[in-house]
Structure formats: C-alpha cells, structure tokens
Length: 242
Image 1 (cartoon, rainbow, N blue to C red):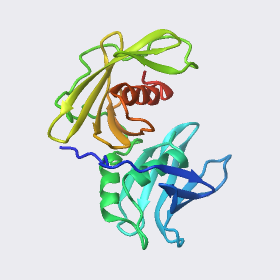
Image 2: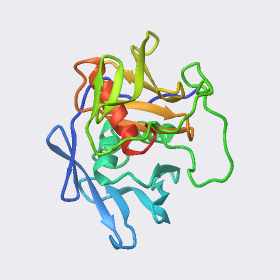
Image 3: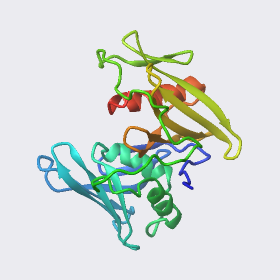
C-alpha cells in the first residue's frame, strides 16, 4: 500500500536567490552546483548552511533524473529531470523536509515514499494499484493532436485547449483519507491519471498510467473542483501526458 504526502494545511512555497520561503519566511537554502550549460546539481541546506540533501543530475539531453541523497541516512530518492529548483522547493515545503538543525525525518520519509523509484532503471513494472484500479481501461493514451500553446481550461467536466476537447475528469469522495480522487481520461477513453487531493491541501499526488510514475502537483487555487482538475490537467499538458 502506498501512503501519500499531502499536508492538511496549505503552506505557500516560493523560491528566490538560493532561498526557499514558506509562508513568506526563509525556510531553507537551495543552491545550484556546477555549470548551467553542462547541467547543475542542487544542494538543499538548513538556513545555517548545513547540507541535508544533495540532488545529483544523472543523464543528459533532456533525459534523466535527479538522484536525491539524504546526507544523514544515506537513503536515495529519484526525481524527474524536468523539475527545477522552483518546483522542487514546493515539494520540500509540502513535506516539511528541513528543520532548524537538519533534515526532518518525517519529511524525508514522505519524500521517499513519493520518489522511491529509480527512473533510469531498465525494465517495466505493472501499474501500481493505489486507488483500486490497475489499468487504463485499454484506451489509447496518445494525446489529442492540436495547437498546444493555448491555456488549458475546464468547462463542466470537459478539459479543453484552444477550443479542442482533450479530455474529461471524474471525481469521487475518498472518505477514508478525507479527500477526493480525480480521474482524467482522454476522449478515446484511455485513463491518463488518477490523483488524490486531501481537503485544504496545497499539493496533489498523482500516478500517470502511461509510465507508472508518481508526481506531485502544487495547487495555487482550490476553491472549486474544477480549479483542482484544471491544474492537474495543465501539469499533464506541460509534460505531454494530455
């Protein structure tokens, strides 16, 4: 069974000039190492400069991952290469990974649950049965062809980009965890993603069926169900899942 790293209370995460801010206050240091041309590693530190985790870039040409090494425990996690310091900072705050004196063990545990899989490991794994479903219903997972530069919008349960229907979402109550399960499907019927959003949380955890990867989405707005669905959909569009 997989546990999810959603906080029950929203915390605003921002990043500026090597510093991660939580609710407007300095929270941690996050410094780049190496050449921007060749690819940079990242060092996550307490405000006093103690390194708690190192993000080592593996791969090149837009393909690869960050190997996240926690200094105290030696444990490793793996993040997609498309993540940057701004997006990673949101995950750091969402899981409350850094304390005043070092790593927060509970934050490390939650992070590793989400990013435990080595993305460069050869071979395929079956779809993880997280929400009670273990298939994409046999549908085509190729996104709808259209102009992809327009804003992603939600009308009712329909997801559109440039006035083209690119998918639809369904929502069910998760009474056990006090949240909602969102499912997004393509017009072909192929299930693209299942996501869990806990009430009042500013993060949403999801699994994409195309590659069986887990992701975290930071939510700026959660007033309506369509707000959550739109941000999940935009995340998927940016990464060519939808």
